[in-house]
Amino acid sequence: MQTSVPHVATNQSLAIALAAVLAAPERTVLVVDAAHRLQGQINASIAIERLSNDERASFLSALQQRDPVAATGLPGADRGLDELLQGDLVTLVPATDLITAARQVLARGTVTLPVVDEDHHLLGAVSRRALLRALLQQNSGARIFGTITTAALFSHEAYEGHAAGHFLHRKDANVVRWFSPHP
Image (cartoon, rainbow, N blue to C red; front, side, top):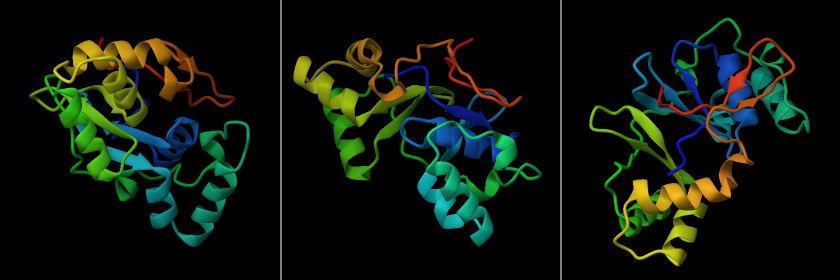
């Protein structure tokens, strides 16, 4: 399990959420409330599907840029992110075994699944790549907090080397942070 996952808060603007999506390696960010409970996700596909024509064109242009795009250059600075929020996500719990986690990821056709506690607080995420690597390296009875944490953290494969507590620096005042959901 990767504990440092790209996420935004429900009270942030749509523009900040879109900037986070653009900066995220998998083009997906999780959305949490003030208590850090998972509310859903926003990804590039949802943005392309749901933005209006002009906003979609602006987002697609930003998606093609090599350098990070400032939130101020994206649509939605004056409104919330609710319109792009995809709720009701399939989640995993820390005790999920590797085989079950892999089946969930593959059945959903997703690249990552969030891991939450019993109160739905975001603990991290499991990527398809880390799951497959862990399955190849470990036995099938291993648990997410044991095997997948080790597999995902030593590789940092989904997060381009950003460890918990590090920041993804931006050129604008709206810094998108990669940080551990644990205080």
